[in-house]
Amino acid sequence: MSRDHLYSPPTDPQQVAQLQQVIVQCFNSTAERTAEYLAVVGPENFRLIQQGTRVAGGLAIHWMGQWFGGRVVPMAGLASVGIAPEYRGAGLAARLLTDVIGELHEKNIPLSALYPATQRLYRKVGYEQAGHRVRYAIAPRDIGLADRTLAVHAVDALDHSRFKDLYQELAREQNGVLDRSAALWTFATRDRGAHWAYLFGPEETPEGYVVFRQQAGQNAYEVLISDWAVRTPRAARRLWTLLADHSSQASRICWSSGASDWLVLALPEQTWEHLHWDRWMLRIVDVVGALSARGWPPGVTGELHLAVSDDLIPDNNGCFVLTVADGRTTVEPGGRGDLKTDIAGLAPLYSGLFTAHQLQTMGKIDASSESLAVADRLFAGPQPWMLEHF
Image (tube, rainbow, N blue to C red):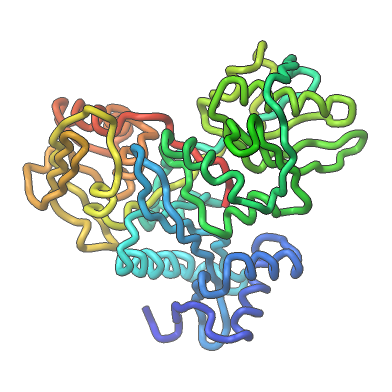
């Protein structure tokens, strides 16, 4: 990169103030809300791109992980990627992303994920669609449940220790669900005002929980769920009953889940609706590290010969042999390169969003029928999703 364009964390209060102004304008935020966001994430977790002495843009990094195949893979979530209007059109966003990907590789972070405002930019640097976040809604009067078998305990929404074990139990069985950073735990229970939190079942050994806030509407309020987990059928029924009890004042209940939301199986009828369907994107930063860290379906064995190309990270280029057997994984250089893909095409295969056969149909990979079958078997699992938008 030219010396006119410098990449770094903020180094002084003046840079933090300039970054704050960029975020305020790019995301139509307020100074107060942006200052709180900077404080929760931490200025040290932002990266800037400068032109001369001015901050031209920046982004936030959430250092966390994602669950795949029952294991947490270290992941850097990128957020608040913005370039000030006067500096747009010069390729600075791509330069900023290229530098952060290089930094992540140097730090041995295998994955990076984000929610795109535009796919074109992120595809240029190797990101691709990799999982869902779906917003659902239901009117409380349409829930149709009144199961009060389990006790309900109101608890402090800011006491994350009350929820973490249940959340991790849920996440371990999923693909793509976040191993949250401290900042994301804060946003799940404090963002945009007061939150209410409840445990279902015995207070010391709960079977589920829900965290939500109430947002005023024209004639009634909406219940906006920011976090939830249930571990038993009766916890799911008790959660829905608690929400149905808002029917006298609330117009609707809104929550996030995956494309295959099992929570609605507890409802007697299909009275819910989709509000918004979003896909997050994933970037494989370290091919060997990402494949080695991932978990795999129990009892599955196989050997997959990959050939990967990556325009940004030279270490990701070449042939690799992935071997999975008895819960153990090895990734070695070499092999026949039977399944060919670029780094972006590898992301939805890795996450399990699409099968190898589907990706070949769309020209994202090129493989023999034998390799397609092996890949489909290895990367099988629940549809990848996230609960939160970061």
